Amino acid sequence: MRPLPRETTLSFVERLASRFGVSAADVITEFFAFGNRKSMDSLKPDGEVYFNADARARFAALSRVPQEHLHRALPAWTRFEPEGRYDTGPAVTFHSASSIEPTGGACTRCTAARTGRTEPAHLYMAAHQRLCVRHQMWLPGTQDVPDQNSGRNQLSLAQLPETVQARGRHTALLRRRENAADAYPVAQAIIATWWDAARPQETAWAQRLESLARANPAAELSPHAARDAVTYPDTVTLAGLLASPFWQHQVLADTGTHRPHVAADTPSFIHELALRLRRPWLASVLADSDSGPLIAWLQACWRSRAGERERTVSMWRVAPAYRTPASAGSNPDRPSRTEGTADKADADADADNAQGFARGLALARAFAAEHGHLCIPYRHEKDGFQLGLWLSNQRATGPQLPPERSRALSDLDPWWMGADPMRVLSIRR
Image (tube, rainbow, N blue to C red):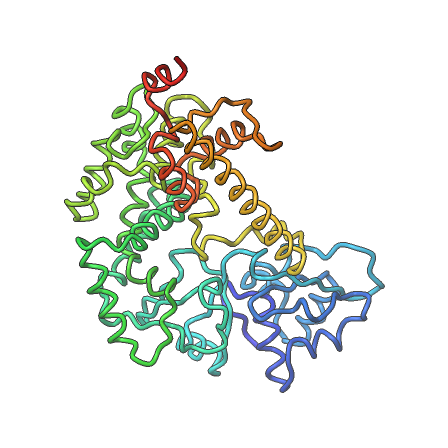
């Protein structure tokens, strides 16, 4: 049975098991002793399995495909060796979709042409691989649409030629620019905030969304997948601007020795952005924005180019509040936590963070009501809560602070982020 290029190992096992009329769980239960496998509850269709050498040899023999061919086709075939105290023989470990690189359902027509069967398959998908040019289909990622067991979530792009053409620009950008792959998630986060803003001047996206709906009358339009397909041409264009060394230097030229606090501080860059996206109204709309992934990138770019810190991947970091599902995957070279443990830890961290912010905001509201501002001394405490330190941490987060939290603080004091020095001096006097 032929593997598909970039196919997940679990997808290959699923297709292999289907030839015998059973599931992947049935095959793994039969092949592996109980001590050599985790609970089958951890096995999810959108996840991944990792085999040791004995297990790889057994599955290669079962599929009648040489191991070197499987190694070339399956990115995770030998990537992670199960560790632990196993019995002698084949061993397997499972990992969820949140702990591996982004995946998605393979184009159903391409799969049928390669295998002769209309069966679902999962592939590892980089951003530029989510579009099948041959069949003009948009392939939603597993993080966008958890149910990838059929092709009903794959969207026809027959009426969106600009999205299909953008794939060529994207691959050319990846060849030309060293940081193009890192710039794309940042551009995607920026575009997502503009999409959520729903500005009346934005008419192109509305027209594309209507065309997408007409081309897919029976499809289930996932909000994330539809947004990514509609905005893909603009995201590629913006990624090219962010990855350009010339325009990175221009950010520094615009601001000089002063860190940009609003988009208007980098007029040349914002003008070029509006020009490339063919939206002349965008420059004035963005001029006063002081939070969000665009401002975060401008500040990180300024720090890097000004020599304040070395140029590292931090320029391309997207804050959790602005990450899109497609960019939420991690490196499969380092799977560490099981699905239940990871989900619980993330949920607990989010709950603690939200509770701490709610308490700090309540105390900040009381301080603003009494003093009329949020110029809180750094060592100020209230009811055992270090309010000054808390507000300093919110300022340090800067434009990466979730937008609803930034708005809540701005409602208390418009100058909470960076107060006018003369105003601070008058307050202290």
